[in-house]
Amino acid sequence: MRVYFRDYNKIFSSVGSQLRTTRSVEKSDLIVSSSENYRDKPIIIFQHGRIAVHFKKQPQTHYLVWGMKDKRRLIRRGAKKKFIHVTGCLLFNYLKPRKKHKGINIVYAPLHNEAGHAYFINRDFRDELRKIKGVNIITKLLRMQKSHSWKYDNVICSDRDTRRHYEICADVLSIADLVVTIEEGTFALLAQYLDIPVISCNSRKDYRREDGRLMAGDKRFINGVIEVGSSRKQCVFSPAVKRVDLKRIKTLPEVIMQQLRNPAELKEERVQACIDYGGADIKNPIKETLNIIKKIYDEYRSSAKN
Image 1 (cartoon, helix red, strand yellow):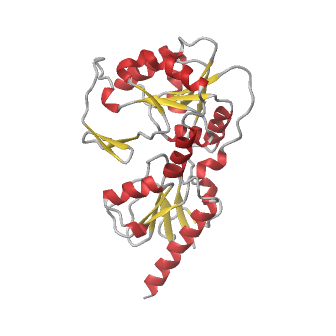
Image 2 (tube, helix red, strand yellow; image 1 turned 90 degrees about the horizontal axis):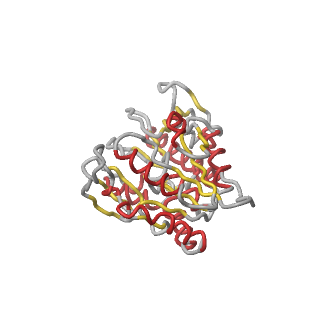
Image 3 (cartoon, helix red, strand yellow; image 1 turned 180 degrees about the vertical axis):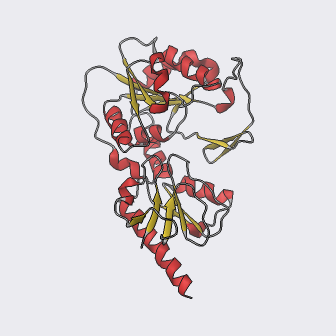
C-alpha cells in the first residue's frame, strides 16, 4: 500500500513514519491528508486540531477524528456515520509529566491573529495578567506572532510546521500551574489532559471591532460548540473551563486566584472533555489509526475487484 501523505501541523507524523509513502498522487493507492480533493482514489481526512477536521462533500471520503464530539459534528454536516472513525488524539503522546518548580507559573496563549478585534482581546488579557502579584507569566506564541513578541512577557515561540512545536508545547505545559487562553482550542485540550486548570473567555459575541466597540454577533450552541455568524467559525465551550465575561475582563485576576486555590474544582470535567474531544479513553491512538487506514484500504481494494 503506497500512501500519498500530506501532513499539516505535523500532527500525523507519528503515523506517517510507519506508512509506505510516495510523493506522487498518481502512484499512490491511498490519500491521507488534512484537506484534499482527488477523484478515483480513496481519501482519508484526518483531524489537525481541536474541532479542526474539514468536511468534504466528495462521496466515499473517510474521516479520522479524535473524539465523539467531532464525529457527531461531522454527521450534522452531512458525513455518513460509517465513514467517520474515532482514533483518539495523537498529540497526547507528546506530553510530559508535570514538573515541580519554584513559584506559580501562569501560561498565557493569546489568539494567533493580532489584527482587528483580536488585538484588543489579546491586549486586555495581557494587561489584566500583569496586575497579578507574585506569579510568573509565560506567553506561548506561534512563529507567525514573533514580530509581536515585544508586547508580551517571557515569550516562548514555536513553529507548528515542525515536530519541535509539540515538544515546546509539552515543555511549557510541564511547568504550568494554570493556563489562560482566549479560545478553548488544542493548547487548552493538552492542558486539560495534564489536569491543568484552564481559564478562557465566555463568548465570541463580545469580540471588539477595529474601532474598539464590542461586536455582537449572532450565535448558536450545538453540543458545546458555538457557530458564529455566516462564517461558521466554531469554538468549543466545554464545562471543563472557567470563563471570564469579556465585558467584565477586570475580574480575570480574581478568577485566576480562585482557580489557583481550588485546582481540582473542574478535575472531572477536564477528564470528560479529553474523552469527548480527544478520545483519551483510547489506549493506543497510533495503533488504532494505522489499523483503520489498513481496513479502509482493504475495503477499497475489495470493492474495486468486484
